[in-house]
Image (cartoon, rainbow, N blue to C red; front, side, top):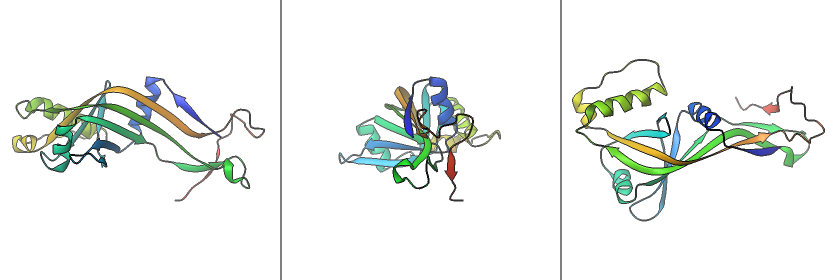
Length: 175
């Protein structure tokens, strides 16, 4: 099995759309790595996040707005041969992107509302409304992605003697 690098933006965006959370990596205000899961929205090369309006995370990002955002699709264990340990892999896709955080300011409540709708669209087709106090009490993040990298893991190697492109990988489910 092998890992495939994906450069097609459409495939990268399809991978992001399959995810329900992302993991953001920042350098905290003490200069240490800090990773936290977050809900997100994505549109046209821009990732949107939201959080409380203050605290440790916001202070850290205000100090250093550079951010790394990682997505991973649900994984399953696959193998090419059940008796060969090194043929076992996790089958999944991941996307890593980098950019800088800009915060949408409180005086732009219509933009905050639009972005929150975009975030909620990742999780629900339902339409929402937001009270002005709620819009003022949320920190909305905007990250123009500078670069994407995407990989698919656990893909059958085409030179495998058992490879058949018309048959799915043998998978083990933990459900």
